[in-house]
Image 1 (cartoon, rainbow, N blue to C red):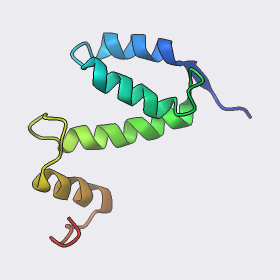
Image 2 (cartoon, rainbow, N blue to C red; image 1 turned 90 degrees about the vertical axis):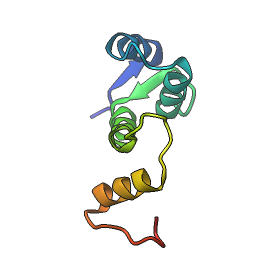
Image 3 (cartoon, helix red, strand yellow; image 1 turned 60 degrees about the vertical axis):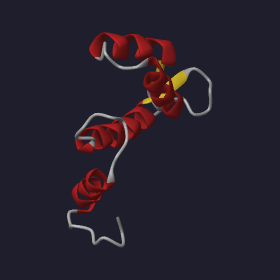
Length: 90
């Protein structure tokens, strides 16, 4: 059974419609992660893996500055592992 793929430009169009406030730089970086070999196609597996990571990051970026401060990072690790991390780990 072969992998499913979508053209990168088609995914870009969908993101622009669904996330009309997304900054071009962030969209370019996101698509670059998904199309890491630069062939203009994104596999379903790569799309899902990237979206899981991005949604986890976005959910913990409380102030929406596209960066995680120490408390946000602690929350991300806690959600990921299921246990509150100690300060050394954070």
